[in-house]
Image (cartoon, rainbow, N blue to C red; front, side, top):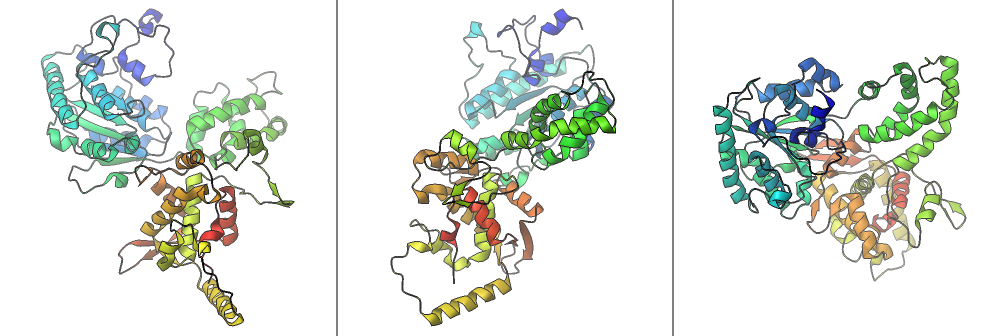
Length: 529
């Protein structure tokens, strides 16, 4: 392909390569849109090239190709799920480039409302391009899901009829069209998002058109979306986090001097993997660190020996910790009267009344901290006192009447505390953990009299939405991560309840340290016998 031909970017390549800068903001198409524009419009890549482009994703690629099946074979809805930056979107788009099949792609990150999402799908199926000649208007106005079903059935029938009657000169594209909806988990934040999610999951059953394949891409597992509404459950394809070896293969793939970069990865990859395994975050920090790593070198093509590796490491070592703290610093609610400069100075140590406060020696998201505190409270406090602990007045310390404890009652209290220590932390169901998390996350720093703006900031940090009164998407994943880190363990299932119970393995000192990092009054919610 010549440079003149490559400058004419098609609609498909523009959608996939969104980061590419285009000189002309509104390119004039060289030909009217056709059904062929629903594919990448380029030479399809081989399976070997596809597998080599995505280290660590061989099983997911082969599963996706197997579930899509041969040409024109009806396919059940699929759900690709996993954490961010695990290759879900890139893999599914490149699989369709390999199969050379027509598809429609819409992302809920750019389509921030049901109308924009519906019209984006219809515009692609109707081969409509927004431009100045049509006033940047959509082909069809669609506000309601019921209207979208009728318009989608009509547009899909026209595309299938065109595919059936058109003789392709190259490879056959088949008679099926696939709908890929990315970032489905963001729909939970929309107005009436739960209704739109139920509609998307039941779209395959409502349309009853075998020519349509539906692929949903989500950062949350399918269990989060289950409801009482009957629909065909999508077939799940899980994308786990990259391992350390897989990340090494990814970063070494396009390097000129692989030996030099491999020596650099030996130094930085393991400590950074303890903080994050997202490729874009690692790539951002590694690019600046690698320049620091290569500063003593005059020739970047050199193959480093052991002495050179030690010299390069000594030059890089002072910058690793600062890079970890700056790029992956966990946000926490600000203190009263603190400016941004003061909060940065207090990021490492803070002093109150001449005493040095202990800080966490590991990184943890704010929502995970609140879950850790909620699990500690659920293990320490009796379940019968939850209603009085988390009332609107803010804890047990706000009781109006306080009698002076006698010596006999103090002895009983000490004996009860010793017995509680001997028994260890109690177990609790998941529902109780989420209920306590809801209370303490919604309260946050309100007990200190913070204003409404700080409460809004905390809602974003904890992943809790007060208006919809629903948990944000990553809470259940955070619980699973805390279980994997042994902060919380599963203590079996209760024969009466029939559900799994959990137990907190965190000490009171660590819980106080976590609560101090959030400015949360933990002692106010602890039941002292």
